[in-house]
Image (cartoon, rainbow, N blue to C red; front, side, top):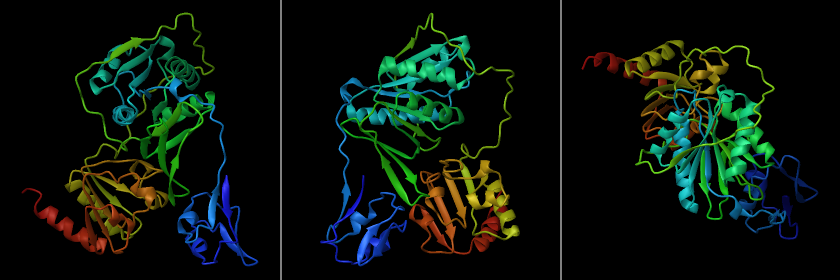
Length: 395
């Protein structure tokens, strides 16, 4: 697959050269040529006024029988005591996708003594919960969990598999996808289902310069991992599904990983569940202003968050960073000070209920998603807002 230029049609208007974000097109000997920097973003095709640029198509022989693969499988993240909220977000999206192709949503639970937890999932509209409940599965071990996951897929033959982009999910999903020699799209921000059961997996790519639409058309199942706080949670409904304990009598669950000691990890401060966030970006450089903004967050009973530059400068820990390389959040209110709004940041907070953005640049990208846009010096706004909140904190 590649970009083809018809030099007989080309009028040398230079549109493609100026529009290419990667510098992949260059003029040589009076002709436009494609170099190795091409990322197949296809912007040149869209900007050629005479359709001199086309895409070379690769024909894939249709060897896949899509009718053999049905339903959407959701991997359930839990700690043995409670189900991680990301599971309910995956179920919500799975129900939406399944409706397009008139199929069911099935959940997979792996662990020890987890049957009671499994019944909680039925309250969210799933048709089936397959439970692999054995003492060998009490603790997450990637090789064992992979084998069980593979067994479930062989039994169910799901069209699509959704996994949370957690520490364990990111370890598990690639192993299972590799076993089935199928594709996996990580950290999806949007998922859409086509009527032909192809899943459109959308995520920022090439440093956020484009939103890549990825499809797995020649293999099944289709794998996608999704970050926490990106999708909407499923709503509670009257249960109608069932829980099935999968009988694996006689199966050998032997791991190459030996558990020597289990320690409970201390709970780290998280911004993901905060209802109010105040975020600071590189546009705020004055230490006194940063201190004021931190006080504003405190008076609003919220938490401080930041963009990547402030983590790189050592001001805040990565646990406070919003964005593709940080955390995804969906608070009721977020106020941003001095944040330009690069897609790496906005992809992690664009679904917040109320976004108030403060920036000196009227063309700042953050204003494209803000509900309230304030073009002003963040230092001045911080000073006035702090004074107002202190005067009215007992009101």
